[in-house]
Amino acid sequence: MVNLIICTHGKFSEELVKASEMISGKQENLKYVTFELGESTDGLVEKYKKAIKELDNKDETLFIVDLFGGSPYNAASRIVADNERLDIVAGVNLPMMLEIYMSRNELCLSELVDVAIHAGRDSVKSFKTNFDNNVEEEL
Image (cartoon, rainbow, N blue to C red; front, side):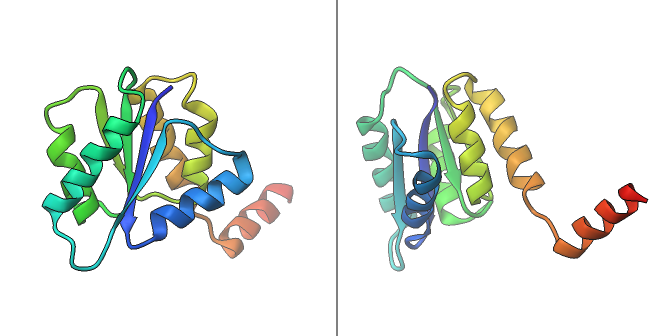
């Protein structure tokens, strides 16, 4: 099972984990980290190291963060850069989390990264664009 560390600006990571677990149940080997106003990237790196110690270190770990290039991403990249058993996906959303939960027991880290990226991208939809495309297919 791939370990998960979810980190966002503010309490979004905590609430995202709560919402996703409402749908798919409590998850093992998952930690969330919050990046609060006034905290430093160095402090966030320390939070990550603590979270990693609390996870099953035999397995690979995926950091899932809110913004590419944001502080949660930059702090994680300092840890991930020299470790092939770790990776980061930016752009977290609820559908991405649910897809990751369903796949993390069967897939390795690199495969799970692909699932996360596709699920996040594929879940962004416009009602009207989706509706218009469905109408055209029916005609």
